[in-house]
Image 1 (tube, rainbow, N blue to C red):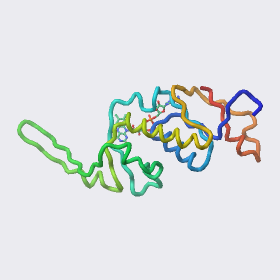
Image 2: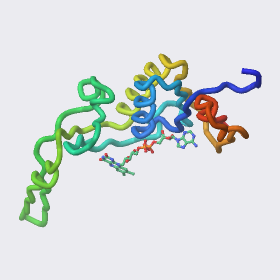
Image 3: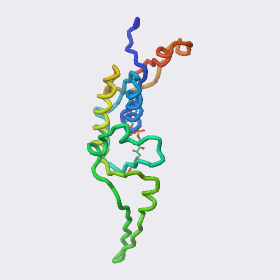
Image 4: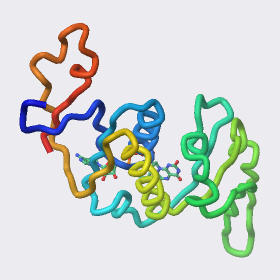
Length: 165
Ligand SMILES: Cc1cc2nc3c(=O)[nH]c(=O)nc-3n(C[C@H](O)[C@H](O)[C@H](O)COP(=O)(O)OP(=O)(O)OC[C@H]3O[C@@H](n4cnc5c(N)ncnc54)[C@H](O)[C@@H]3O)c2cc1C
């Protein structure tokens, strides 16, 4: 390159689950990908967890993008869903099994800090193989587009975006 900028075919902003999935898909398709995360670590601000679902009708699931995801990044499968409403000495129980398992291939409990950190490490490994990688403590403020990005017949150059980080 003849300028002072580093160039990548794709830049993903944020290493949450969305950014991780996007970066993994790009890397698997051999696209040179840089991931920029403003946190000290991906997920460093998370203090809680939740449930993650793989839908049967979804075109892809997170364990297809990251085959060891469930073994390494989740806590446990969740197979029963009840709400127990306690009032005085009585308890009313609602069985939500049908609702939660509609279109569900699997559901796991996760801790976001652990999950996001694991995803970030995997994304770093995958994107490094393309010539990119993951950088933390980089906050993206906007995009600067190359003046000639709409030029025809030069796909690689058109996909290059300079980040205004
Ligand atoms: C209270 C609560 C409970 C939830 N419970 C569940 C649940 O149980 N199950 C479930 O599936 N979903 C749940 N969600 C939703 C879930 O958190 C989001 O759908 C999911 O986190 C979205 O992922 P994401 O990667 O798009 O965004 P995020 O997880 O928000 O990740 C964005 C990442 O981008 C980084 N970033 C942002 N701006 C910049 C910038 N300018 N430069 C660099 N980096 C940047 C952030 O630091 C962050 O790491 C819950 C949400 C909330 C608020």
